[in-house]
Length: 84
Image 1 (cartoon, rainbow, N blue to C red):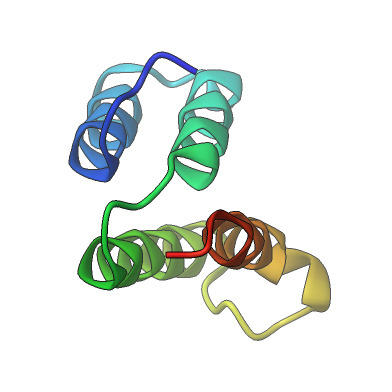
Image 2: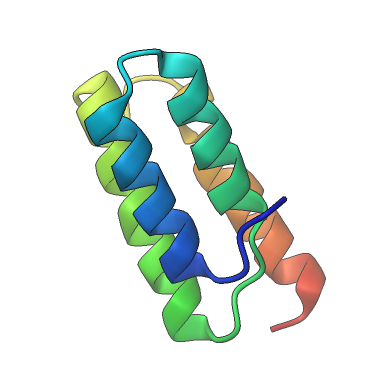
């Protein structure tokens, strides 16, 4: 992982989505965001907001199938395991 903060990871996701039509790079950026530790609960909520918006954009709704929640679930697990 090369990203240091959630804000940088979100900016990277937006940059990749704007510049690159190859979905693999966008998914790599999302994976990086998911694994980026949050410095605070506020940063965690910011991460969740972005992931929810990204999921809605990708699938139309994050509530269609459990698989659509995988990035959000992983982000929650990373945050809880970090103990913040």
